Image (cartoon, rainbow, N blue to C red; front, side, top):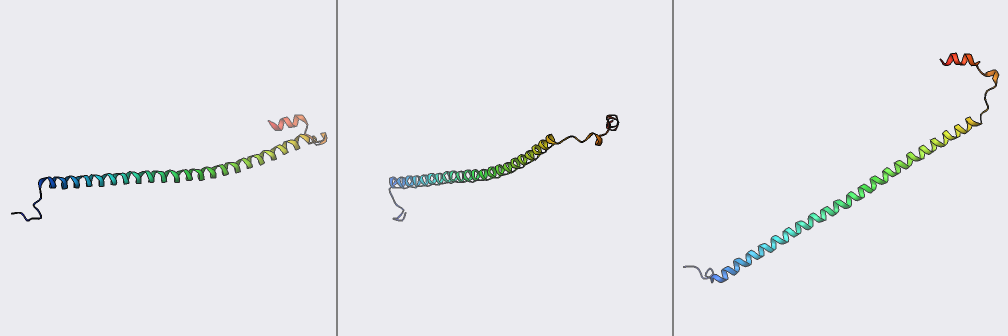
Length: 108
């Protein structure tokens, strides 16, 4: 009725089915573990790249702020020298000044 190759004992068939089930479960566990490892590796890579990008952006921003600070200091120094020069200046002679009444009329 059945060929000789297909006639196996029921307990052997159960063991073969159990073995196939365990092999499938092990392969599934390895697959899930590999996917999880891949996700963790990708997350780590993204974190490293983002960290480097932030460092580069921070460096560029610090450089720009330092340039702005240097320009502001230069401007402040120029203004300070103008103030010092104005403080040392002698007033104009009285012959060159406008009379107070005329100056007041012009400023109205």
